[in-house]
Amino acid sequence: MDALSEIISALLWLLIGVPVGLALHEFGHAIMILLLTKQKVTFQFGAQGTKKEIHLGRLAILLHFEPSAPFGCRYHLENYAALSRQQVFWITVGGPIASLLLAILCGVLWLTTNRIDPWRGLVVLNFVAFLYSSIPGHYAKWQGVQGGFPNDGLQVAQLFQRKKDKNDVSPR
Ligand SMILES: [Zn+2]
Picture 1 (cartoon, protein in one colour):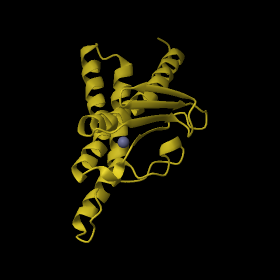
Picture 2 (spheres, protein in one colour):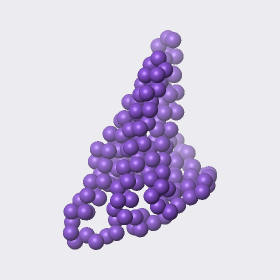
Picture 3 (tube, rainbow, N blue to C red):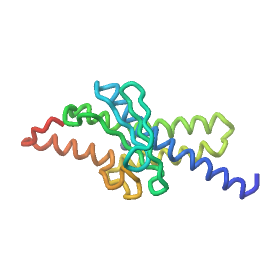
Picture 4 (cartoon, protein in one colour):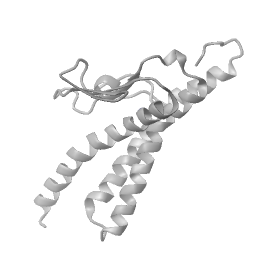
């Protein structure tokens, strides 16, 4: 394969790998909600507003693709205040766990498929997604519906901070 076709193939894998990786990260959160609560979960892809809606049991998927927010991805649940601290913790860490598992899976696929390049790239991509969501901070503004919100690591840190505060009697 010459250099140009290698670059094109790498870009194609990125184009598939980034949205799929982000969607599976969010799915990690959603699976925890479906497993630990009886609540309905909404999955939002792209920009705010809905262009298409898909319903699968307690899971609703809203699609609104826009060039300005191609990789936006976010989940909502019916009643956040009704969750226990333990539920909030597992739902929050569900995303980073999914990214880490995906990185490990791509690593295994890379090792077992004669080290074909796309898998190696996807290991890096999903591991970066794991770090980016775990190390406490805020999501970048360009990230569509997620932009500006605290990431998973910061949400967990805030959860433990609230636990330390004896005066805080909020249910989450
Ligand atoms: Zn997340």
